Length: 135
Image 1 (cartoon, rainbow, N blue to C red):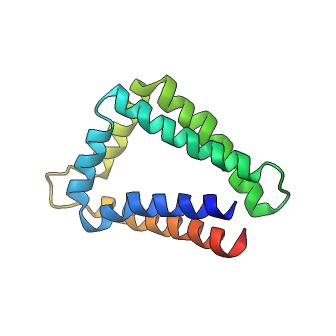
Image 2 (image 1 turned 135 degrees about the horizontal axis):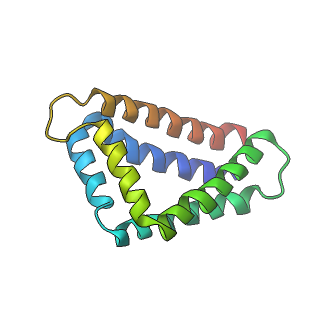
Image 3 (image 1 turned 45 degrees about the vertical axis):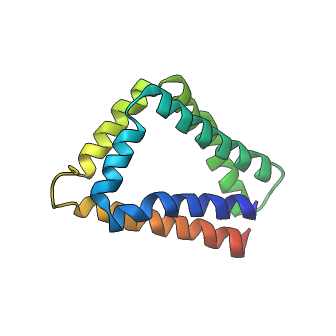
């Protein structure tokens, strides 16, 4: 279970830290990631696989943190992974709305994007801490 938490935390940090340091390039990259249904489905395979890893590692646990991670894995594999794999067009529409809210990559004011990046790094750091110390 701790390895899954640490890997999840590192993935979150690696995907959100660029929002703090290079928000324009990161937003353009995110827009390219959801540009086609095939790319969204490939992302769905990764999300569902990570969710399944959480399910497998926390299935026989009674501890609070491991149980919470188990249900987070249920959500990721069933809801998020399923949405990405079955309804990629709907996900692309939602992602476009979120990316539009985060800011235009061409503008200089990307404060919301940087705040989202800092928050994401904090969440990723929490998962790494959870895997290293708690679980």
